[in-house]
Length: 111
Length: 113
Image 1 (tube, one colour):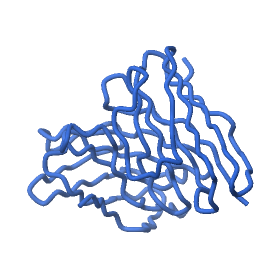
Image 2 (cartoon, rainbow over the protein chains, first blue to last red):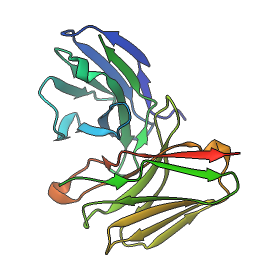
Image 3 (cartoon, chains in turn brown, red):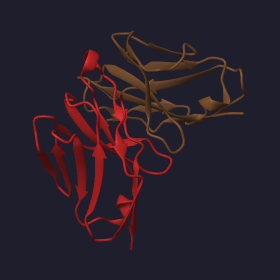
């Protein structure tokens, strides 16, 4: 049983560009959350998707947007990239909104 | 405000017990979690405790919850070099029916041979 799968694993982008990160939840899970983890920090909640809608959002600007598909997979989009967006982006899935399973993350570097 | 606090660093000798501490903010949090992160990897759920419990034991791991002081601890018995990692505690605040996890900054555990 595959856990949470994220792609790509690493990504380098230039300031001002746009990026899309992808996440496939663990089998049986219907809820996907995205987190940003800066170096040396704990993960920060970006938003959560359930039933293809954004259910809750953290303190992130509108440049961060997402989508959930009917098969529960999800995308995170970031527009107009800034150097400060460089981080590890983690996807977490769950069924009941508890006991989240995390993926290995996408390391985004903005140059 | 939202602020989960942890000490930054802990060093123990192999075979000793490790105790990692955390203070959280929301007394109404229903679940509290401990995650482990190894270098370059995502987060691995180690254990969790429901807020109506005081203690939970799972093999080498013991979680203690003091709701009065909003204090959570993780004890690792017979610590091994493979336990070296960053450990995060996290809470799920119940305000506004929140679904997010709020993490501390992590405690780096170094196990010396």
